[in-house]
Image (cartoon, rainbow, N blue to C red; front, side, top):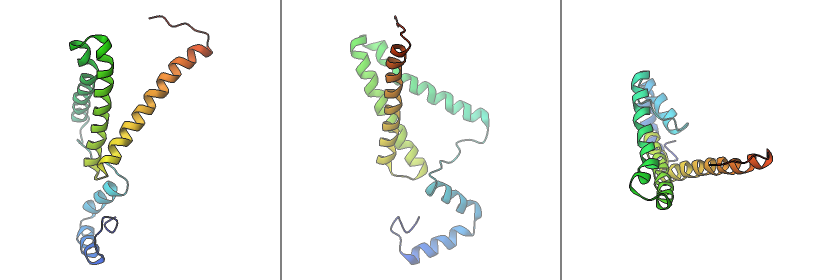
Length: 137
């Protein structure tokens, strides 16, 4: 993994010798770089739940706030835009935590989330047609 980052053989040897002396550090580096594993935010379920709750509220802010301040016709595209930007930024944050490529991770999060939304929207149109159901709002 160090060679891929452009280190010389001498630098890699020195770094590896230093890291392998501490088994936990070595395992953490392998997990972070090879498997793109993010470190744990917390070891307790209560703290993890608090983090999840805060981020859930932040995510809801992006989808709800335009409807409070704008007319619905304008709020829909603003909400979609804000959500897509937020998804990209979540990918960037993930990259910062795992040490991976920021742009790739941002676009990956953006693309996967957009594809999932598109599939859900498509199924919402196709399934009622297949079941001959009518949807009224």
